Length: 66
Image (tube, rainbow, N blue to C red; front, top):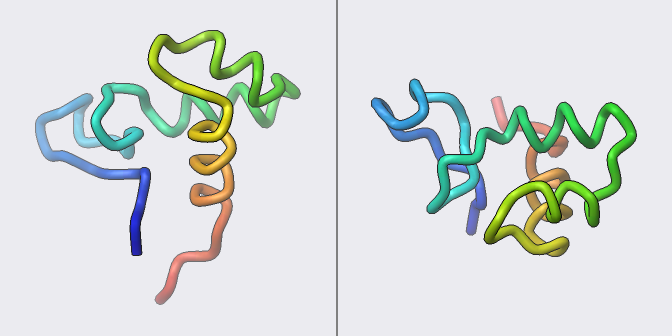
């Protein structure tokens, strides 16, 4: 599986982040759940495009295997 989300011990306190960044997935999801559009979220973070934001949202919401 090609994932956009990673956890790196010692990086951003080990919280899930967008791979290759220091952007916490929770920051993306908190904004999205508050009604901020993927386009506006991408504008908030340098280096993120709308497609990446949408993919992170899909991945974060996908059920995790047990």
